[in-house]
Image (cartoon, rainbow, N blue to C red; front, side, top):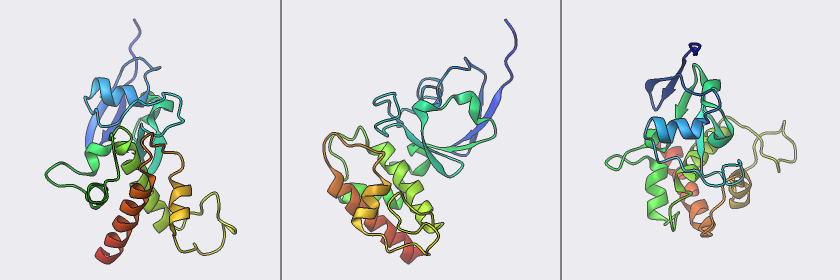
Length: 176
């Protein structure tokens, strides 16, 4: 068997090596090889967002990405955003606003929201921006819903998710 070159990934700030089957998804590498089971396998087709992680500051569906493609990348999973003992501002807001019911989609929702907040800070337009070159419009609930539209919740906790995101955004603006 030929030696496969290793891919080195930084996952939640720790160096990891991937040397497995080049067809292994990033999702399966995280869950099965590294035991980072916070990231969930939902549809396994990139349609639900349960597997959302942050790669180099951008949110991706880890079920659609191969682990071998991420040599040198910085990957953040839900485990890297906070711990049960030290929740992130966003995680605290999800708890305070009951931004989950069954909780299956919650890790993907939170990773997506964390990246979305950074996208807004960077001035990225959304799919509904009238003029992508104009200064960003105020972020209202409809804009949050649009930006989070790639993350589905079968339980329908959307109002609570939006409230949690809005609270986290307000808290982080005060902290800056």
